[in-house]
Length: 73
Image (cartoon, rainbow, N blue to C red; front, side, top):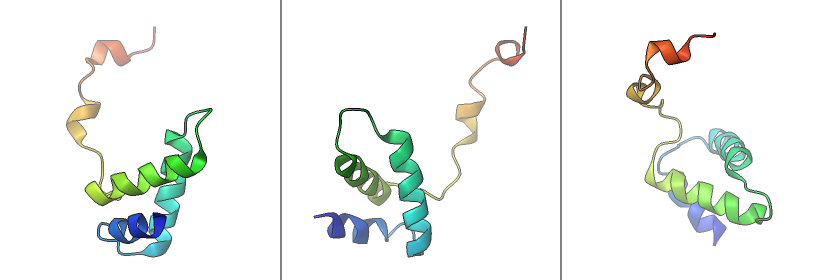
């Protein structure tokens, strides 16, 4: 049930308002056409249980591209 997923996600985010905001943003970004929105929201809450959604992204992922590839032509 979704309530179980929400309570598990609250182990990573202590503020319920922040959890709702992060979940809605993630659901909009992860939603695929021709799938149910409810399934996408459940997937987001399941992911929030495993990781902290409020933590900043790792810095090394942004530095994988060489500087020449990022410059405009």
